[in-house]
Amino acid sequence: MDALIGFIAGVVLGGLFFGGLYLTVTRLERSGNPAVLMMISLIVRMAVLLSGIYYLSQGDWRRIVGTLAGVMVSRFILIRLVREEKV
Image (cartoon, rainbow, N blue to C red; front, side, top):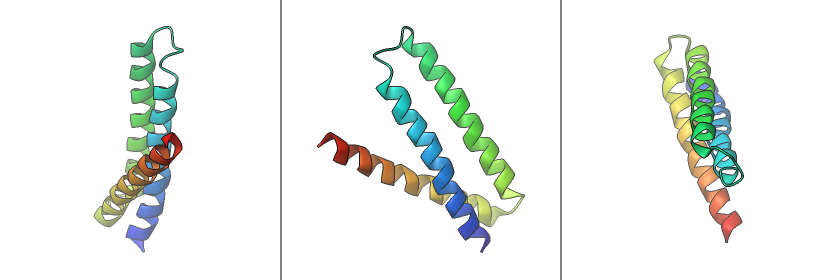
């Protein structure tokens, strides 16, 4: 049960992380300073992801593994969605 909770939370956290990355990349052309935009985006996305993993893990390795698996699954889902959008 702990791994399942972690997995679901990982999918949400991964969706936020990689969705934020997608939004940042799509806005780079319109940005006056793309390097600053990427750096701020990276810091905010990593802070949300790592604090979410830390908070949800509660010292249980099964939740950490489940969360990381959920993040990877959300990565594959978003890659597939973006590829279908481009085609």
